[in-house]
Length: 260
Image 1 (cartoon, helix red, strand yellow):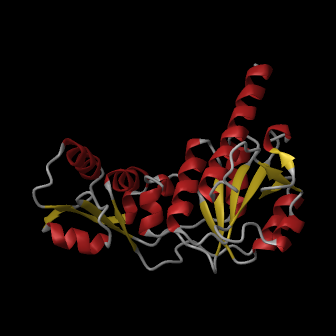
Image 2 (cartoon, rainbow, N blue to C red):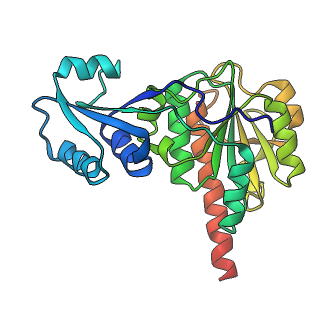
Image 3 (cartoon, one colour):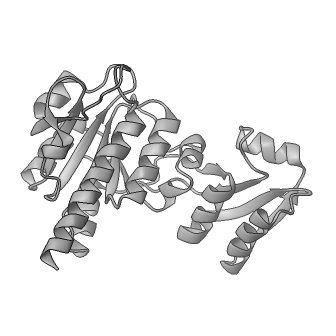
């Protein structure tokens, strides 16, 4: 599917309590060191350090300003981890994981989102609702940055993420693999409650400003809309993705109960 090989970025800094903890739990071999701000002795920090030390990860105390400088953000919570390059996967790997779990695939494809906060929030929802992976373009889109990792609360360390070179081609390949690919819209389309999301499914989420590109929408099997009663024109990308993923999880849970 023309996926970019894993490890595109040249290393990374992960900051914040939950992101650092999830990184240490899920990918301890990726972590070279955890830096903690001097005087940072809260129970929450100590819990993260216990996880790091249990996995043989070096922990060092440093001046708070140095920790802040490394994080590049005021939301560092007194702790940062220095890790290797983020390991992207291939989209077929996500389908294989779904098959191995005997589950219908559930994927999210992000059509050019540029806000790392939105990307991170969507990855967090993907992890919460059991999606098998998230795919992002390798250009004109936000990669997995420190900000995205923080916004995901560390879910980036649990969810398979692919960077694809040919976004339209990836949609075609998914459809050829038997995955129902749904675009997302505002005014027109099938109400999300009426779509069958128990089958292998991929949601394509449009960018923050322009929404779904016309060329992308044409490649999809159909377009879903989220019925809204309010006066605001639309939900933001991360909120829309959370609703779609929740509805897929709800339908699948109900189907499993009927079959039990």
